[in-house]
Every structure is written in structure tokens, then in C-alpha cells.
Amino acid sequence: MADTTQALISRVSVPPRLLGDPAPSGADLDDIMAAAMSAPDHGALTPWRFITIQGDARAKLGDVFVDALKKRDPDADEAAIEKERNRPMRSPMIVVAVAKIDDTVANVPPVEQSVATGIAAYNMILAAQDKGYGGILLTGKNAQDLNVKAALGLEPTDEIVSFVYLGTPIKQVSDKRRPNASEFMSEWTG
Image 1 (cartoon, rainbow, N blue to C red):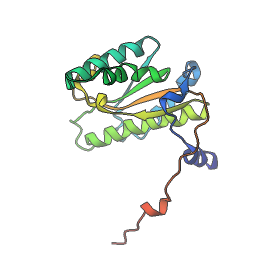
Image 2 (tube, rainbow, N blue to C red; image 1 turned 120 degrees about the horizontal axis):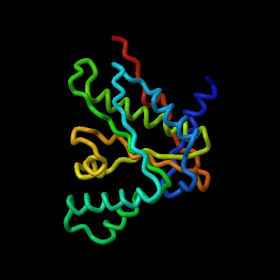
Image 3 (tube, rainbow, N blue to C red; image 1 turned 135 degrees about the vertical axis):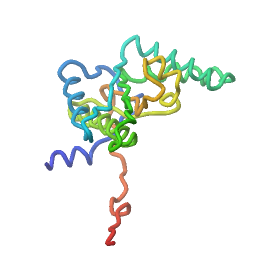
């Protein structure tokens, strides 16, 4: 277990601008997705769905982001439009982590289904790092945008938990300064 603990402690987020080719593929991608499937899943609902976007599809996603921006902000300037257009091009692969919420299950509330999907996405990051890749979990306004959801074939009630950017780090990312865990712990004694 020492290796697992060390992997968790040493995990770093790799910004998309530092992710290059190759993206995970073949057996590596299969293993990364298998790690996602190991997330805790109360009620065995498997609330998660994953949409991979790579190659030319990234530019199409950029067009979707631009359309969504123009609907949210008709006065968006050219710099903001170009930023949205280029957003998906920053890494060779994006995996959209989606929670398909089932609100009919009384003992598994929607928040628990979203959390399970987030853990699945986090497991992908850990597995990717273990295989020499890097990644980061990002959201932003596009994750809540109904136009983006529709373009991805999702229902309005589906929740985009994260855009998981994956690729190979083009340079070493320094370890993140982490707070002392004891500052965030307390003991309740009744």
C-alpha cells in the first residue's frame, strides 16, 4: 500500500498547455478506463458516462464552445471567442466525464452520483499518471451550458462533472505545495 499512498501524495495536475502527444490509447486507455470503473458506486448505478474527444473532433468541440459563448454573451469580443475556439486544442485528448443522474433512487441522492462520477474521473488521472501520462480535471461555464450538453448528445439533467484533459507531459510539473492535513481535521467526541 505504500506505493498507492505515495502515488496519491505525489499526484500533480498537468495544465493542458503542458500536455502533448501521444494521448493514451490501446491498452493504456483501456486500463485508465478500467480504473474509472473502480470508483465507489452506491447502489451499483454506474452513473458515469465518458465521451472521448481527440483529433479533428477537438476543433468541432471548439466550435461548440464558441456557439455556446455567443449565446451566453452576444457581446463577446474576438479574444474571448478565440479563447473558446482554442480551448479543446490544448491537449491531444479530452474525456468528458458525465453523471447520468437517476433521481428515482431514494437511497442514492443525485449528489452521491455526481461525487461517484468525479471519483471515477480522478481515478482516470491517477491511472494516467501511473502510465506516464498527465492530465487535469477542468469544468468552467461550458460544463453547465445546455447548448454544450445538447451538442454532446446529453440530456439537460445530465451533469458534466469534468472535462478530463489527457496527454503526455512535455515538461516536468513541480510538486504542488500541499497544506498540512492536520489543519483540516478535527475530532468530534459527541
